[in-house]
Image (cartoon, rainbow, N blue to C red; front, side, top):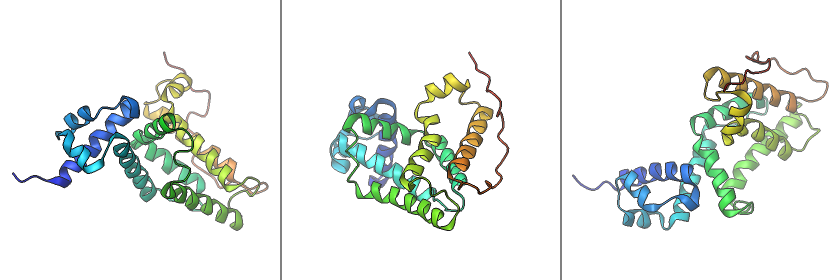
Length: 214
């Protein structure tokens, strides 16, 4: 069978995503990635360069998929929060990779990345457009609103041990649905301008104090 370079690259990317998400940049090993991908180490170095470059390629792909999948409509910011929550649920490795990046490189690593900056600029521009149209509160800067939104949505999957301590079985579909609804409602209240009645959202299941599970 002829060698399929694209298939090999795809296997390496999948294997590297899992390895970095599980072990971080420091703990990841190229030989384990090669074994997972059923490839040799030489092909990894040939296609991607060193381990740090491979991590950058993995994170770039993950961010690209997020950018393509989720868009902010200035009139539907709470719904965007729910869609983002769903994306993190389907791809929890993205948050692990971002945490690994921060731990390994520090806060300044991505501050001059044009792709990353452009990604966030699109979202803050959408929030600013919502402020001009009266759908989003103008009491807070768009960048602050975006940070609040991301924190509300992402923390559930970024620190699953905290979610489990507070909510019980954080993998239980009922618990997930209840927190998703609460996050969407929280974002709705954050972004709604003062004096404007929030557009009705879905009822929040499990809005009472969640039961803790041992």
